[in-house]
Length: 307
Ligand SMILES: Cc1cc2nc3c(=O)[nH]c(=O)nc-3n(C[C@H](O)[C@H](O)[C@H](O)COP(=O)(O)OP(=O)(O)OC[C@H]3O[C@@H](n4cnc5c(N)ncnc54)[C@H](O)[C@@H]3O)c2cc1C
Image (cartoon, rainbow, N blue to C red; front, side):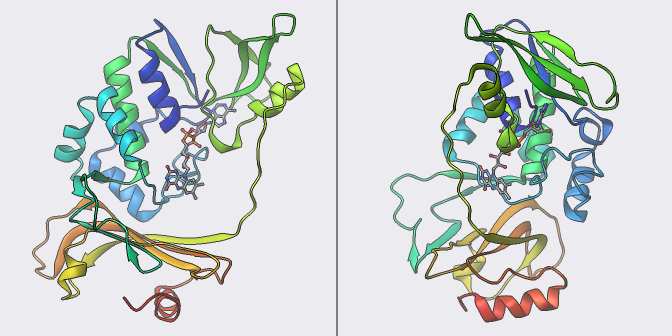
């Protein structure tokens, strides 16, 4: 259930153990927009911030947001998709960055990455492109074992209460809202529908099974945009492609993150040659404005560390 990053990785992993895998995904993720776009077209959607809904991807509203992929996750991706890294580096103009020498992570005045005993590579890519390329790889590599049912929403579990097992799911095709649901049975069912999962509710309804959950309420604000970086003349900043000044509430309520997502060829000698996502964050505080760059710049000057 769900064909985003979690669903793609899970399906690829399960190909070792199951002959047939069905992915039920509520968005039209195999549309030409995703599967046939060139690397530059994908970058263009990303930079113009074409809304997730207008691209047919309303299920992942956070798709343009800056994301951090854990080091172990990157290793798993390379194991499951051996061609992925080469394609990203050669066709999508992304590259790896050294956490030891090309980053500057500061929290509460401490540079966190300066004494690393082991270096880690950071993949400089945006989540939208990564998800799209991973899905293409999944289809290419494991297409004969995997069937996609797109535009289809899981609406309930099929259970056997006497045996205490989930036997399958019911799904509905999104464009036929009035049609009855379709039953699909499986030996092993995994929920990868993300943070708005209904499984907790369904398990409670069907088995009176209470899955312990904790709801945390917090207020955080982000403004994210994509931009080209230019030299500041300060080598300690210009040599760092990844920059993060973390939040540490309640004392430090603002932060900034700069993450490279694409290398560009440019004649401008002042350019650092990268497009990056810039994220301005706050917690327990006044949110960064997103109405104009002028107001945003004012906010930055006023609220962020001069460094
Ligand atoms: C603002 C924001 C910032 C974040 N920053 C980070 C970060 O820096 N690093 C990080 O690791 N994580 C971050 N996350 C979390 C990260 O986005 C999620 O953990 C990640 O997307 C989870 O992937 P997933 O595949 O499990 O679920 P999702 O990406 O949420 O995908 C769920 C999929 O299931 C589909 N779906 C949903 N319901 C159904 C249904 N009933 N039937 C069929 N399909 C369904 C959706 O269309 C979607 O494709 C952030 C999240 C948000 C909201």
